[in-house]
Length: 84
Image (cartoon, rainbow, N blue to C red; front, side, top):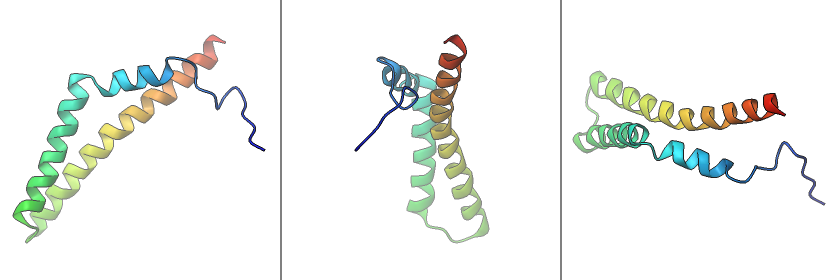
């Protein structure tokens, strides 16, 4: 049997706020740029240490953008608990 408590249930609109955060022009632009950078490195091929460094940098940038959405969700939960 599945049980859920109040912490695991999303409030109405919480997913919408996360989606709106992800759809901000700054987030979209940085995510697209990092994906293009990764694609560029892959299309030219990895033939030197500099190529590996560029791939790592672009991947780190992408992960930071993804983490920003996760951080937004975590901050929302902290704020909600503080206001309760």
